[in-house]
Amino acid sequence: MRHHRHTPTRTPPVHSIQDAGEATPSALIETAQLQRLAATVLSKSPEDLAALAETNPLLVWEWIDAFRKEKLAAEAEARYWSAAAASLSTVTAHVVRAAAE
Image (cartoon, rainbow, N blue to C red; front, top):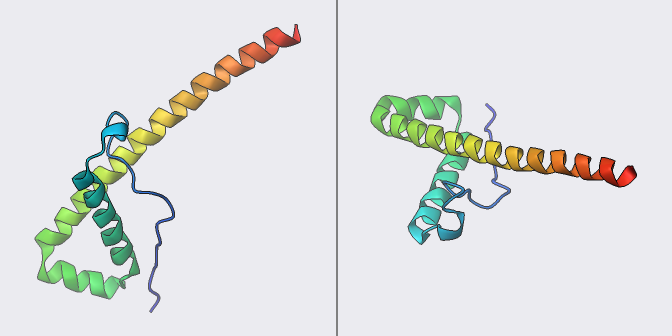
């Protein structure tokens, strides 16, 4: 049976762009703990996860909900950065065209 291992390679995400400069220590700790939990879950076999879900289904649903919220926050952050990059690339193309004329 294969075990899936995941090692986070980036710093913990901040829950919102607006809070990036004001991340509280407790929010950073919560994010780090959630990342460790995700890594632990990914390292478990399907049988281990099934046993956990059978013995403590509410805990598993809490984890699923926490992962879902983190995913939504990450997607919102990705859209933010994509919009900023797209805005710059539009301006850059215009400036390059103007300089070439």
